[in-house]
Image (cartoon, rainbow, N blue to C red):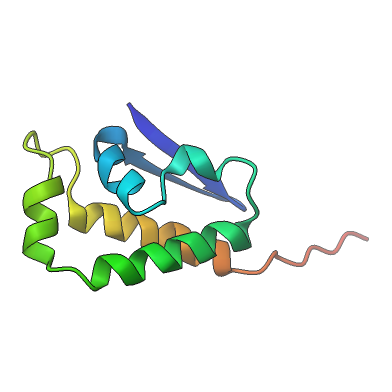
Length: 96
């Protein structure tokens, strides 16, 4: 099972094996449903600050999935990608 997240026209996918990690830092993808992109970007930004303040080896020891499906490093990369997409303003479309 995985999370499929769509922001604007971009879709992101990540394993649900990292649920405890996302929950610990308040960025559980199902909780984003119905939020604005600005709210999600803010929440992810706060989480990334907290994550970066911790010792990476301890985070990996506590959260890297032993079956290889999910790691702190790839979860952080996923969060950064989603946040970046949330920060991109809506595109201007012109029809005539």
